[in-house]
Length: 199
Image 1 (cartoon, helix red, strand yellow):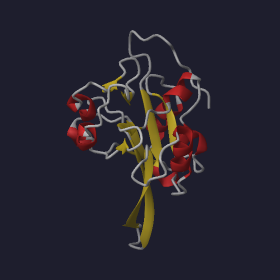
Image 2: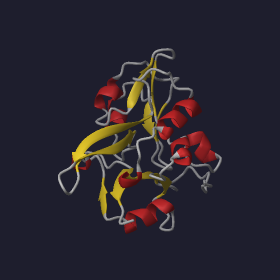
Image 3: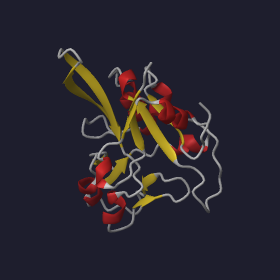
Image 4: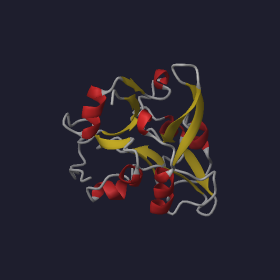
């Protein structure tokens, strides 16, 4: 999947978002493995940039079933992790809305971890800094999709620019039967969308 990256940094050129079609996620953890491999994340289970949770549920007939919920940094418009950071190492890029951590400024105080309502940050014991999903920014700058999207077996994960009405994510959001964002009522305005489709 090739992405168009405009290098103009003066305005919000892109509004990157991920749309996860929940009924397509099979819980295979390919996204989790691809992310750990791409970013050389510690093998520790506490260290992850993305994770898939297994949720026990019941189907329409009341029979037990399992659903899968991929979770990662939601790159919120009103990111609480940014506002609590004492060194401003957690910041939001104005040109595209991606929330990042500058490891050179991070003192490892973990205030951002506490503030994140998605538990999407982890402390890297080796580097003594906090880390998280970056939407694979170096890949984006090469016109490539994030590693978790590229490897998604069920095509559950989709990535693109909400400013482009013809992007895959914009089209899916228009065609979805239901659209939700985690903790949406908190006013954070997350950029990860969870949808169900008719097909």
